[in-house]
Amino acid sequence: MVIDRFNGDDESYILYYLEVHKRVSNRDLCEALHLSTSTIRKKLAKMEEKGLLIRTHGGAASIDADRDETMKRKSRINILNKKAIAAEACRLINDGDVLALGGGSTVAEMAPWLLKLKEAVILTDSTVMSTLTIPNQKLEVHINSGIVRGRTGCVVGPTSDILFQSYSADKAFIGCDAFDIEFGVGSDNILVGKVEKVMLKCARERYILCDSTKLNQNALCSFIRISEITALITDDDANPEYIKRMRDAGLKVILATIPRLSEPETDIKGKDVPLESKTLKKTE
Image (cartoon, rainbow, N blue to C red; front, side):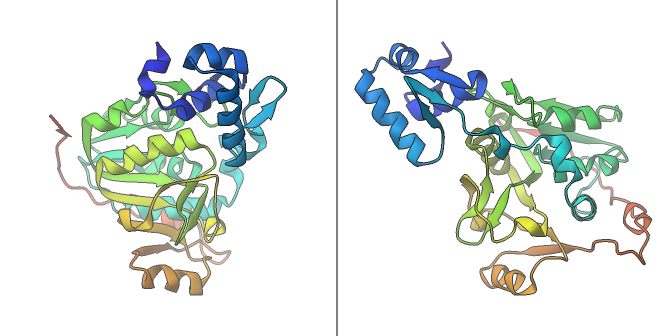
């Protein structure tokens, strides 16, 4: 049964059920979790207080989907910032690297550079990223198993982290919905956050891609602390004072230069990715 995969974590099971079905009744939860109606009501009340769901008459519903923008809409926002950040990220990649790539719109902008690689292994939780990189047959693309989120193409669920627990990556590049020195790296979806935390943990080098509009902001949940990442890659529109605060806190910050009107965008696209040979490392 699906519920057995959550090892008694009732909250995660409820979130997973809502992710798939959008609504659930108290009766169904009582039967699935073998709990009384009063216990279920208390659990749902606590989860609503955390902002994880909305209680309805006789059950619960998923949070307003407006928080979870479609990939198409996200890809149009701050596009020059995202392209610049993606280009900066790709300069850190070597031919033959094992890469863990998240499902954000900024990470997706890395695809054109990844298609130039002669060899690489890609581990991803994104149907969008897997589709964008398939044209290069020299890339070995692995995607996790689970439920595909129709709006963003991210894969979540009780089996979604197994792939990333099985491999050791050289570098992870993950996007986010918010970034704050104290709060950490944030996601507006707790299930996506759980998967991408495991993706970061499987890599030796961990990079967060975040455009400047998301800095000094909080999201629904924090999935990793800034002390656990290698560097933040953001754009040069970021507040200089906040950049200084992050660096003073011990965080390495890489600033990507956004092409201005006087600078053709090809200045960024024309720079090649450095290539060196490495091999896939699978953990025992």
